[in-house]
Length: 250
Image (tube, rainbow, N blue to C red):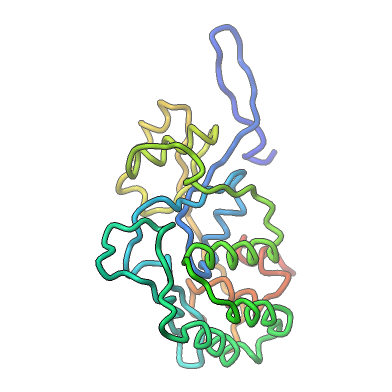
């Protein structure tokens, strides 16, 4: 039986079985890496944590793609001057440079010979023709597209749509309770600030992602892991979900 199928809660009088509800809570990111989508695919409910402070030099506005020389950043410039405490959902893109033209060109130049380039490039070309004002609008649009082409059906929500207080661990736990979580799946870095005891006292089992990064065919020699999902997509096409979930694709 799938580990997500059933969870058990004990009432005062009898044992009652409820459907398990695994929740994942992650900040929106620009063209996320494949492990981001592995968590999304394993979740029953996925919450974009969009009402926290924007963090600089992080994954919110950038990610990596493959090049013939190794890898390169795709970075969306954002307005930050005198905005040290702005929330992620408030962060605006700096359109004073042609960053979108640069990103479109980088994808075209580095993936034009990839097996599935023609399948997906038209979407990216259309996206970079638009003028984006808020970083999150761009992140939601592109992440939603990648989720769709991967055929991930997980329900998604935004934390800003809920009335939840607290910071860091207490905020995450409150969101889990709001979502009716029985399990909370998170990344390994959360070991530093989450307490399994606190979660279990509220009826939530804390789980950590232990991601075995798959190797797949890249168009340049040598394999580089931890790239944006677009690298896998251009190289594996409709098998991308099976690859990132480490399923047998033979």
